[in-house]
Every structure is written in C-alpha cells, then in structure tokens.
Length: 132
Picture (tube, rainbow, N blue to C red):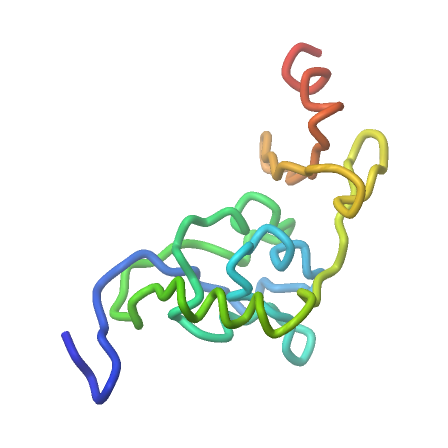
C-alpha cells in the first residue's frame, strides 16, 4: 500500500511499552540496523523503515518492555540502514558478558534469556552456559 511517497505493509515491527521501559539502553546494541535510540530516557524506534523486525533486542530487555507486533509500517529499507551506518559511529551503550565482564567492544556477545533473566554472553563463556 502506498501512503504519500512511502510504501507501507503489514509486518513485524518492535513495539516499546514506555511504562515498562526503564531507559537502560540494553536494547540499543543488538539492533544492528540502528532503529533504536534512547530519547528522553526511553527506548524509541526512530524510524520504522530501519526496523527489520528480527527482534534481537527482545531477549535483552530486563523489564519486558519490548515485543513484536504486526502493524502497518514503512517497508524495511536496506538503503536507509546503510545511510545511518555511513553517517558515523553508532551511539550505543556497550554491554558486558554476564560471566567474565568482557565488553562487546572486545568480543562478540549474544543475548540470552532463561527463566525471565536476560543476559549477555560472550562466545568464550557460551559453552559454560550451555554445558554447565
């Protein structure tokens, strides 16, 4: 469907419950597309076309403020994402591995959630989490 000069479609997109959002910023880093930013102390989807709806941000939200919803939204745009990336360094809050405290600036981190507990785990500590 075309609205004005933009194309819209029903698709998965992140929904943020502002009542539950505590502004910790944990969701910002997993969003490789740059769709999320902290605005006035709350996480916001800054432009629908930047959100691919993959939901990598969901598992790291400690307050459960993020969910996926299906709604009319601008189509996802790889071009818009590339423009954001080309504009300069990403503004993010570096996360640390919950086990060894390694920063995501130094190692790959993966978001994991178990029994309601959200954690970041580096690839070195992941086997310990899986195998005990």
